Image 1 (cartoon, one colour):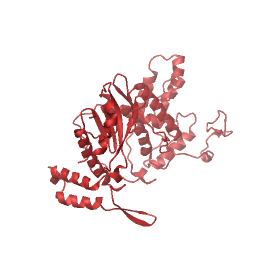
Image 2 (tube, rainbow, N blue to C red; image 1 turned 60 degrees about the vertical axis):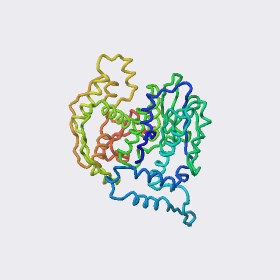
Image 3 (spheres, rainbow, N blue to C red; image 1 turned 120 degrees about the vertical axis):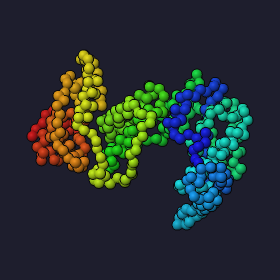
Length: 419
């Protein structure tokens, strides 16, 4: 029953999509409200009363459970009114509000606030009734008349127990943060959105060298890129945000190839035409990550032919036509999706696409080591990293790898090598 109210918002992406089509008149402005200590201030008895009414009005309840309304209410009352916690080896019972950390608390609080906001909007006078109202849990974004902001204390009068109180935040320099969006109200009444980070935000993400599956690390990149694409409005702001993403991910030791792979995959996915009636009938299962074991049961479906086609297309896209010396130098300063593309532009020649598989290995862990060894043993290779595994240089003698005469603190080998 939660989230079906017309005033609810599911996430910042949905909010940004709505705001693109919203127009604010000159005498209106944005304002945000925040509920003070929502869980511990939510009145339990009133919440149970509201939920009881919702359950009785639900004509589809019996399709989901054999329990009667009174059975559900008896169980819910027991859970809500028996909240215990310990402090200093003493067990306490929470007498008011709902428990922090309980899985039922967000549901109860949401249903109570849905009732409260509906009552507040319906009871409001015309001069203070908001023209736009969206709530995410305890955060509310509204468009109201500039002259009526002081009268919005009306919100604090709806809760019969007087427990629920709202704080108000106004726009500053025509901007207002809400969730992770920074909302900018333009003089013509249109709205631009960009990414908002709190002053305490540290830009610290899962380190690329940490003991987690590669999918988790690529997911970090995907989340940041997806947020940029779906929240940021203008192209200039998108470019600035992507520059920031690359910078902070590089600090967290993410290689450029990983970032470029995610961006490329998202472009391909967006360009593909999807059938409206196409259904994916595959099931899914979630398993905990165990190093050394998860890799063995993971599937892969990338074929050599497909890889060659992708590299070839990228090279052709960036080298077609006559390239002047200045244009080639300009392109060579750009890190492209493919390292082969970088090489083709820099050296001004077309690669020989007659590639072959060096080794075959079904075990992904062993395959990662073989890849790292092959890269280390091959001089003048085009790889941007050391492969699927990090191979210490102490093994160079064993592999008969040519190594630098003097170790370079920067990690970059000099041109002069010795056996």
